[in-house]
Image (tube, rainbow, N blue to C red; front, side, top):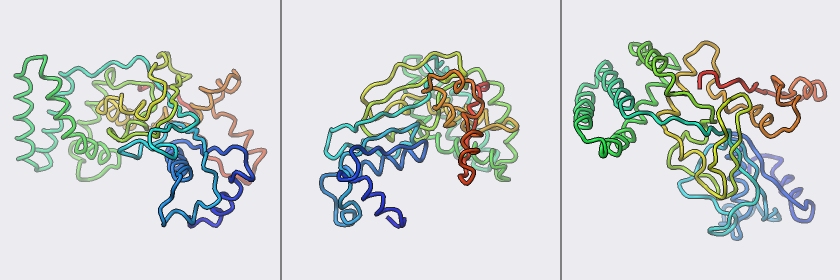
Length: 307
């Protein structure tokens, strides 16, 4: 609301001046588009929001590309259970190999060793005891119990990963061991999907049509989990596989943190033009030559070589 352009945008997108309004965005921009459409399309605004949306369109359509999930419950279009018009896209992978339970236990063991190295002896011993108990369970029970343990340790494991990538002195003693573990198990941590929609398990997107896209530089087939939904694709990901894939890719020299997330990947996936599909930068040079005053930070769609 603080932007000097806010009122201008509201007026220009009103029903009197615009026959159809779209909120569109990529990544966090897609998340902002979700929030804008959800607020604008409300039939009744609370007192704090009402002055800022007076005269706005109440039928904003959504087009988003791999938005970050933000909500514990789906956003609806103006009223409960009414889906948004538009489309949500995400780079998908229809050939994901699940992590074996033996590897999941090794991940937990690595985390337990790390806790001990960092001086968290009690937590380390507690985790090691849980690992031994799970190893003694029959196969038909092991998976469910292990999934619960993964939920408990996910935040701590992610913190170690971010610490290693940021070269934090706190985790310097274990950085090499974690990088070597990722590389040793690379075959299990590879994927071609865009990981961003799955960064926050349990959070969901607006209720709307979802279309999976194929990574144009991957041999993996397209996923088939499209349709009207609020939780695709992120909640279908294996969180540990997602995070270890990101981590393993990122510890390599000159690697991108989210290579399958580049906007160029979406431009190429949606385009029918072979020149665009083969372009290294999706035409950013041409765009900048025609708009020299506009700062454009395009990121090329690299092949999912690690994943």
